[in-house]
Structures are given as structure tokens and as C-alpha cells.
Image (cartoon, rainbow, N blue to C red; front, side, top):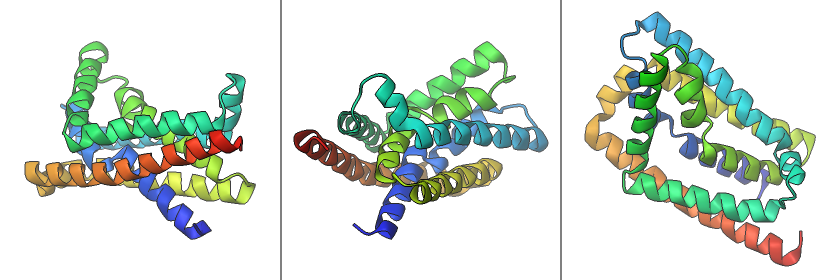
Length: 210
């Protein structure tokens, strides 16, 4: 696989895992009662927090794993399985229901004061799946130059999420129930294939000891 193919694969993996279109209705749910300016502030803050968290794992994910004695191969297998489960939930429409429950809890406990940090930044943007994908991809971009390219891809995905938040009302109205269902299932199939590839790479790494 060429470097540009790896970049494209990384972009697709992160974009599908973060799932900006799927976050649009959830963003509307947790910002109920806010005007357009307040929603823009929440969207900006959530995007910044989400980027910082994922960038940390993109840069130092391997070091964090080493602290716990976890090999990258083992994490590839575990992360791939986790991504596959997320893909399973997306295909059978279970992920949206789980995220909606997280949003409801946040509204009840915090009264929308900290929705930018929770649940928007964590766990909706920088959730377990996105963090796992970021750490896995970080292992495929070991040099400083390639790691900067990965951060650029990560920034692009976050910016897409930010734009979707700003256009949440229009996006949700445009997609409709049927459109969201089709898009979520399609992205789930793509993510499932990428997850299987992660597991295969992880098993190969564990066998060869790389």
C-alpha cells in the first residue's frame, strides 16, 4: 500500500468512526434551547477538545501503551475487534440508540452547562472507537512527517464534524430518517472491512513479533 493509499485509508477510518452525519441529530438534542450563537460556541469548544484528545493519542499512543506493557500488535487486534463491534452497531442501528442515551444523561445531570466536553467531545467525538482507531493509525505513521500528515487528516475530520454541527439542522432535515439509516449502514460496512484489516495486521504482527 502506497503512502497516499494509507492516508486515504486513515481518512476514511477516522471519518467513519467519528461519524459526523450521525452526530448531527445528537448535537441538536444536547443543545436544545440554545440559540444559533450558543450552538456555534458549543460546536467550536467540543471540536477543539475532541481534536486535542485524539491528537494526544495520535502522537503518544504507542508510549501510553508501553506504560501498560501492551504491544501494538495486541492493541491492533483489540482495537479492530472494538471497531468491528461499532460497525455491527451501525449496521443494525444500535449505536445511535446508545449515543442518544448518553446525550440524555448529560442533559439531566449538567443542564447543558458542559455539553461541549460531555457528551459531545467525550464520548461522541473522541469515543473509544475513535481513540482506538487513532492509536492504531499512529503505528502506521511512525516518522515525524507521516505523523504530521496523520494530524492533518485528524484535523480535517474534526473540521468536517464542526461544519456538520453548524449545519446540523439543515443536514438532519436533508438526510431524513431514511437517508440517515442508509448512510449509517453503508459506513458501518466500510468500517467493518477496515476493522477486519486491523485484526489481520495485528495477528500478523503478533506472529512475527514485529
